[in-house]
Image 1: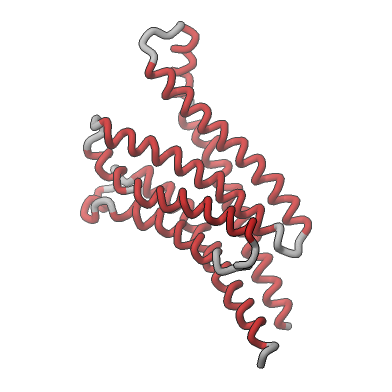
Image 2 (image 1 turned 90 degrees about the horizontal axis):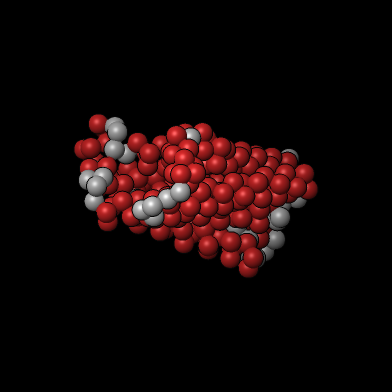
Length: 227
C-alpha cells in the first residue's frame, strides 16, 4: 500500500496536467475569437460581457490545473505563477471589451482594451516560458530541443509585436510628425492583417502545436507505463 500511494498521486497529478493542457489548448483560439468578435455577433448581446470572461478564465483554470504537477519544483512554479498573474489580469480586463464595442469613443474603455492587448501578449510570452519549463522535466530530449527553439522564436515575435504597438501609440501622440513617420504609421495600419497573422497568429499556432505534442507525449508515457 505505501508503494501504491506515490504512484496514485503521480497519476492524479498527470491527469490534472493533461486536463490543464487541454483547457489551455482550446482556450487560446476560443479567447482570440471571442475577444475579437465580442462586438460583432448578435447572439452574444444577450449575455453581455460573459463570453470573454469565460474564455479568459478557461486559460487561468488550465494554469491552475498545471500547478498540481511537480509541486516541489521552484523554477517550474515560478514560471507558472507569472503566467497566472497575467491570466488573472486578462480575466479582470476582459469585460471592458463588451463596453468598448458599444462605446468605442470612450477613452477609459479604449485604454482598458489597449492594456488587455498588451497583457494578452505578455501572457502568451509567459505561457511559452511555462511550456519550456515543463518539457525540461519530461523524458524526451527531442521535444525539449524543439520546444526551446520554437518558444524562443515565439518570444521574439511577441516582443516585436509589443514594440510595434508601443511605437505606433507613441507616434499617434505626436502632433507634428516627419513625412516618413506618417507614412510608416499608415503602413502599420494598412498591414495590420498581415502583422496579426505573422506576429500573433503564428506564435499562437506554434504554442498550440507544442501543447498538443506535450500532451501526446504524456499520454503515451502513461499508457506505456501501464502495459
